[in-house]
Length: 208
Image (cartoon, rainbow, N blue to C red; front, side, top):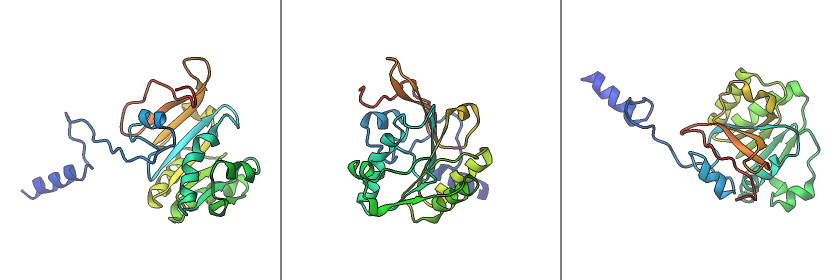
């Protein structure tokens, strides 16, 4: 009987998959600021307490525009957002124009070998609502540590990486790759998402 009680506890806590039942999807994602992107994602937004990867063909394809609605909302609410070793000096007037409260924005400059450590520590600290990093030396093990740190710190983590890594396994809860959409224009394609099937439709800001 004790074993039955333990089993029921596991099922109740949704830590055990029951064959034949569909997985329960929490739709409590953090809104992205783009209603049509939220509608594509199983959690209806950025997965909370998790790492999201943005896979890019080059810098400046709109990755920061994708994130700034969320980052602006956090900073306007008084929460801290950290940028870890951005490849370019953030242009303060542009961030301010996007609605980001610069008083809540921390920019951490670090060498590549230290940036990964700083990324993990900020995620784990519990002091940041979101951490954005550009890890150049992150293998699957390092990404797993970032994922665990985001969960421990109840934080949203965003890793911006070259899309050459798209074929490599990743523990990130969500992976978006920038490429060509159905109309030939630039769009974000979901490559992996926790909690549901990968959407076949891409998201192109401004094209909906």
